[in-house]
Length: 137
Image (cartoon, rainbow, N blue to C red; front, side, top):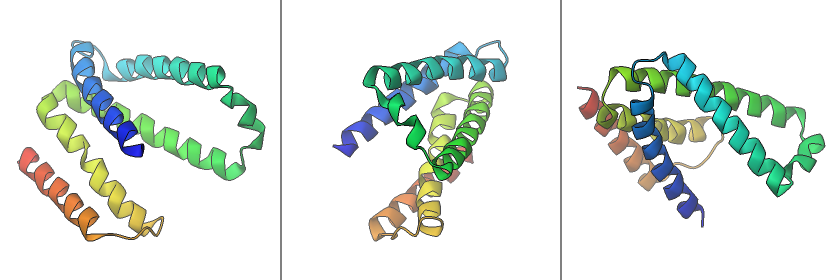
């Protein structure tokens, strides 16, 4: 079932790139990121409230808060740089290069989380890295 969500994520990420490219035309990308973030904030809290997930807030640990904070900062910086790249480059170049994050995540999962690197994952990461280099050059 996880792969259905992953495919949906990929589909909506693709739409994000297309919509963002049109939406940021002739505007400051930092303002665009702020607007996008406000919309995501409303959507995410709406879903959490609708599902009743907010009752679990008191059970969150310091570690939960710390790593969610760090994840939020990383996400924000990623979006800021992504929008700037989209404004300056073509979606057909920027979006695939952005997916280098997949290869980086594979590498970091081994180093930081101690996950096992399979041949399949290693080859996939190397192909992503090679594809990124081709697109940049």
